[in-house]
Length: 145
Image 1 (cartoon, rainbow, N blue to C red):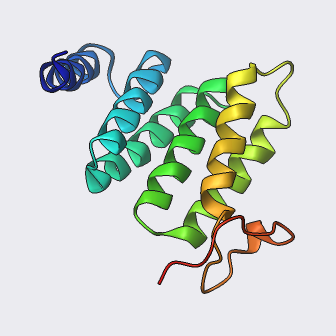
Image 2 (image 1 turned 90 degrees about the vertical axis):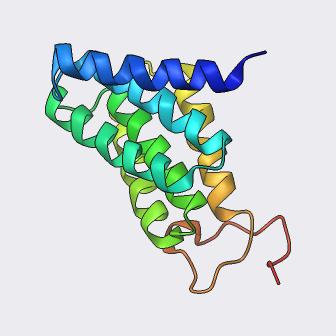
């Protein structure tokens, strides 16, 4: 019942983790992506996008090869780009996330669900210009006015 306080505490927690662990530690990725999700839910698109870029950079430094956390960070970045109305870039990041996910052995169900949800969010409305990664996917909603 204290969403603002919880959000402030999550932000403080991420800042403290970064001070202790640095910006290349695997334990930084999930807290950053959780904060991206919270920022998006609060309508803080610019902040969410900034955090998502940071989460991907940390994940790339922390994991030399595709991992669940790296794919998760990419998916959250794609979602933040959708909210920022940067649809072409979102499609590129989402395509990369899906390609990396396809190399994982036994990825958790939630990861596939997040990728599918993100793709639906990207491709459900017609876009101008067309988003190449949505080719062959019929929109399920009308174009926005």
